[in-house]
Length: 297
Length: 318
Image (cartoon, rainbow over all chains, first blue to last red; front, side):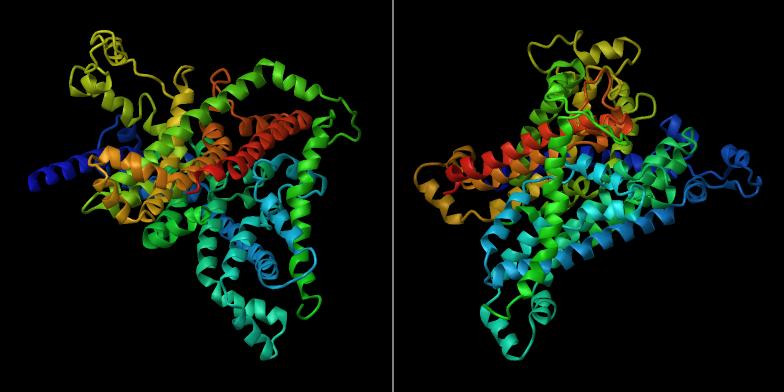
């Protein structure tokens, strides 16, 4: 019996390891290419990190740098040249600005509304809630075109507003917070009222702190979705590099800069992809919780 | 009723935004789809159903429906089943489950666009490790396994692998070939989606009480398969329903991989709806036909979710 169980366990691991290898393939390729020299990439040699021989890079010299500057190890060159060629910090900055603005506005709008729907009794509450339920069915990407037409008419294409505005309302956020607030005991709110707190103070000083766990999960959900979103920025940002979000930057690296040199291109892509992956590996539990949040009943 | 009017200030911003950002665009798309309006035009004319007529009769749009349907019908079931299998495997492991979970979840987290480019190189005919792995395996175990030579009805000289080996390592140019492009894109879709489904199933599995398995065993369901049929699968009903719905909606919206890898080609085999909307309305400025596609797209999604919510939901809840 014992031996049989070990064999079973072994088989399971064998299957899972094969799966893991397939899943990791593109990650391996990405990291490997960002470290190796062009020759090694083209001849598919050098394993993961390549030989790392110090050499002079012709594309770099052609761009106008001195030979001295252009002589280094492949991994140094790839990452250095990537940053020389494209304003990567700017793209990352834009990503931070857009995702944070979206999240903050979403909370400012959703939290009071969720509180009202969960804890205040007023005429039309059921109607508002059913409106929320209906809006949950509408995928924002699906209505991207009419939104784009509206923004174009308002002259907002190629602005930060265009990147942020359509996402300011998160009906999912309202729904989630409402469900969460339903579980908060009324006594807590009554006590706050007895202490003379107004409704505004209750929302921000009583309800907000109790909602931190749900809010954190929602933050991860929202930030990951909008950091990775490519479709919407692609629609509304047409050419202004200063407004590029990380995915738009990635697209530019691929098409624009020296497409005959893959190392620096992959280095840019790794740089842009890494922050989120590192954050994920550090706070895995929270991330998985946040992203699968939509699965909560 | 407390404190009078506070609620109005609480709900007003949300209501206004819902109307402007979510509800009004539905009507706008509907309206535009009956006109010949293009962005930038000063005037427009009502053209009735002309745009819809084009959509269902012109070859391009028929191909669009096919490509979208193929993608959804392939990716959803496979990624759901893979997610379930992975979850059950992990659940039965004695050690190491967390590592696999992290790895399988990575594609869900990583910027899809970046991963699409990484896949493009991985599958590249001269630079990619996939084709070099295949080429190095000619005449060996890899050919035997991946060429399906172990199946009795596959001729080991005629399998796709053997033919490619014989023709000077002529392995597919996965993303550029008419007969492989859509399947390759589907594969990347599955690769990206199954980890998400796995995590949802893992959560579902922890919700099944142990006693049910003991009870099933007492009733004579001894084998793993019988227990799965009797306990696991029915108990996972609500999870499955949810997983299928959410995966379908996400799958319908595929765009990133198509735009970066195939641009809808070759010969429109990967011309999915979101890409069609983008190409027609934004790149070619044919707003009205884009609006018609939008309406059909939203129609699909709404019908699907209504179906899930009000028809099936009643049957799977125990």
